[in-house]
Amino acid sequence: MIETISYQELKGNNKEIVDEQFEKLIAEITEKYGAKVLSNESDEEGELYTRITELKIKFETVLDYIKYCLMYGADLDVVSPTKLKISGNEMGNTIGYIIDFFKKFAQKYGVAFNVYVKNEIDADLNALKEGRCDEDDIYLMESEEGLLRVKAVFEGDGKTEEIIIKKILASLNQDIVVNKVITKSMDESKGIFSGLVAIEMFCKPFDIVEVAYKFLPVAISFENSDIELDISELQDIGNDLGGAVFELTHAAANMNKK
Image 1 (cartoon, rainbow, N blue to C red):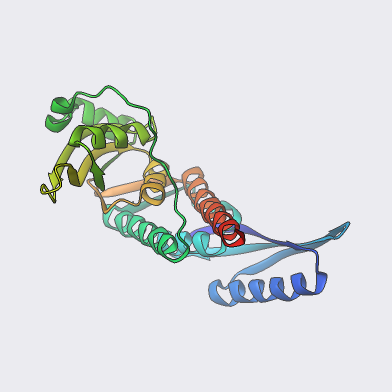
Image 2 (cartoon, helix red, strand yellow; image 1 turned 90 degrees about the horizontal axis):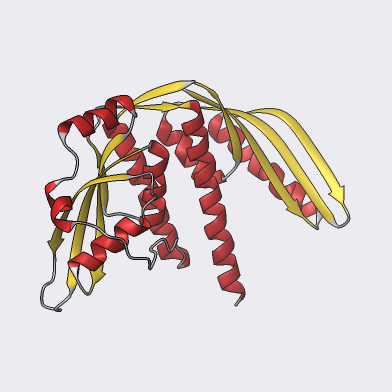
């Protein structure tokens, strides 16, 4: 059970419309999640009218919590639990839902994150294909540093396999530790690399959520049988996803104005 305090806000220059739409939103959330209204506020500043409601909402699973953050994009505080243990399969299903959500958003509105950078990095591809970390390194990262062991598969098209690998590695968060890379060419007739790049990495839960919605990988799997999320990670992940949806929605709206 995840207990949260969620803050819903709506602004506009037409008080009647803001009130009508906001009341519908709060009624929908209350009915769907059994939310409890803790406070209601309104404010008028010049022509701008604002409604804010504070809600207490409980979620049975991490996936329920993530769905709310994606759908309603609210700022929220996680009240409890201080730590939550879930299975690797549950985490995998949650990440899969996030990827699917942002893929559908991109298909519908033509907007997605452009995360690939042009900077080149030095990387020993032979070492990456064999695996750079030994068993002691892996034990330290998993047991002492609490990093997740994750395998992510990306689609890649470019002049060479080396260019694609380096492009992906340069674009990943620097806190992510990449251990191993495996590639598979799907179409060699073009004279370029066109295929899949599988990367084994070690990272925090927040980092792999960011990889999921920004890179939209083909697949992500977890080697960990159990995964522990603390209260700050749950909160940061939820708020980050809500912010990501808001950013893409804003970009899509601006595209429609052109």
